[in-house]
Image (cartoon, rainbow, N blue to C red):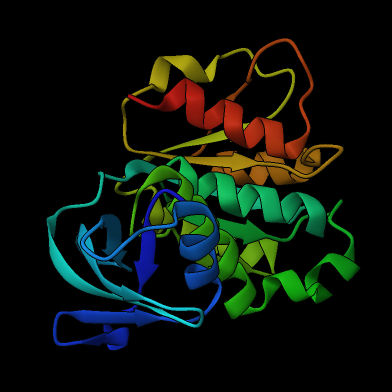
Length: 235
């Protein structure tokens, strides 16, 4: 935890009191004394300093001063076929940690129906994994998350509007063009499930305006494809 995150409604003026797992982290790992300064940030807001006023066996109290903007987000929207829950947890953390602007979790032919029933997709749980990524990378603004449970309506009805502001790419093995050439642009990248997109899905994504690209000669797991795309396309 490289930054202590808090919500705006947790502030009392410019004072912050923590008595949950954030306090436990501060007390057991940071072990501050009154007067010490910790890095803090308001979720979806500014970052700054938290000067420890007191720390007891049950809570820590700080005076907060904010004034630093969080790092810029990558101009990148990822459309990822919903992976298995264990992998989804890592993808959520990694997208927040690496500064992805938006993540759309979408259905696909090779996505198991049971994946949509996972507790990981509960709003509060998604939030927790996003915050873990923000705490690691020292950021306060999580990616926007969208759940698209119907593939074709999303691609036909919503995707064209998104592509008015971004270049669309569909990552799929066997495509001739490399994604590397688009680094630095505002992008939307579609990444398929384990086993890949079906031919129908690739054709529909291309019809909506996406360009077929490859991520190199190797076939990657979904979570590694996500990280590879972010690395290859970051400015």
